[in-house]
Length: 323
Ligand code: A3P
Image (cartoon, rainbow, N blue to C red; front, side):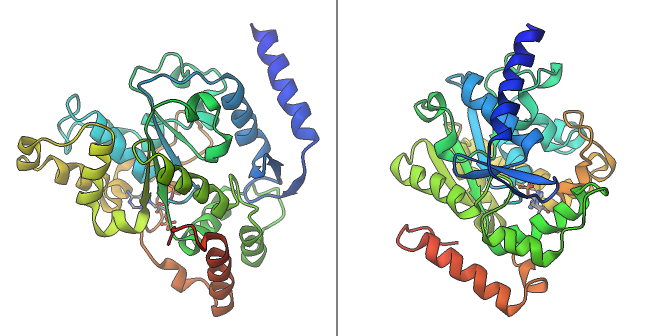
């Protein structure tokens, strides 16, 4: 078994060695694979594993995002919705008060592929909630052809860039040469981001949501901020678990929204000072910065704004997707 696993991973590494490389954000390089960019070790190996070996279950629920688009938030909301019968105390005794959302909802390509006991996909109880940054067209056919719901969250690329840049400053190992904000901006515009290009990744899920509206729900971070109650109800309905009148009257939706709010989550001890058990090198607080819409106004020059807007317009023109 051990030897077999080593043989498989050697195959992945051999494949990676042949791929185009470019400058990375919090790794030295990103590798281009099937039109998207991935971090070689934590990332691409997992993507290959998902494509070849991941076994979906009919009860699975998938959460898909571009990094820095609200993954942490979506994980918290969907976990709370799906487990609300079991965990119905949202203020004093809920897993999200003790564990990071990333711990209760693992990433398929990051947390499952190396068999560690807490993240072994085969021992996770059903229904599994699994997150991914993998582009829609790169998902294994077994997932694309399944009837499992996929919830996608999209965010304005200007805020995604700012969030990504701040994140990678914290995550970039000190022994790598610094990545300036200008260089990072250039990389982002050229689509060279982990799991990017941003636009292509978003478009894949957008098109799937238009084609299969019952299977792919396309949400926007900005809408979740302005209408959190409505969005939470919509997610619950989409997942086939609508809130009952009784639950609504009891204020369950409000409780979930409050539990998962940036203000609440970012102030919890576990998210301020905790570390993930799944990926111990990552501190939980890196996933909580400001949680606002429009912080790009404080960071981007007019020239940068125009350049990003132009790319977005060009890429999304005629698709119906407006961000
Ligand atoms: P900012 O850097 O703009 O603050 P991801 O979870 O996909 O990595 O995205 C991280 C971004 O989502 C960060 O954005 C982070 O602050 C924000 N975020 C994290 N938790 C959130 C929450 N509960 N509500 C709203 N935004 C949240």
